[in-house]
Image (cartoon, rainbow, N blue to C red; front, side):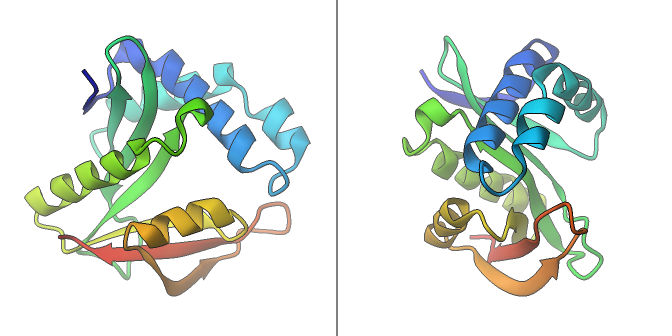
Amino acid sequence: MDIIRPMTQADIPRVAEIHVSSRRTAYRGIISDKRLFGEITVGGQIPKFAERLSDSTYTTVVYDSGCLLWAFMTMCPCRDADKPSAYEVRSIYVDPAKTGNGIGTQLLAYCNGIAASLGHNEICLWVLKENHAARAFYKKMGYAPDGTKRDVDSTKPAKLRYCRSVL
């Protein structure tokens, strides 16, 4: 039985693996191969997820099929000063082998429920401008760009903020 549940310490290696494989698939051609395949490693992500697990600011959940984790999502109160009542999808990644099977849809619905229960009226997320597949997915899920753009620097691609009302 597939469930969405809080991430545990035991989940961290698989979550790190999903994170790396998903980024390598989704961001190929957007982020350099040197970064994707040389700098972003499963071993390097494990401490980041262990830290996130111990930080009460973040809620990380996993999509568990009962025998294997297929996705994860991290949520938190929106970090953007101009969105004080919003909730944020900090990250959402589905194993490339399961993309297109409705898991992302279920995770975003779960986030909506959490945001509503906490009294937030909006959900925001940041997406790479060049990640057209993700942007199309978010649009299908009711998110829309709000005109806010983040240009990090010349080595990192621009991000767009997408938002939607909590249902």
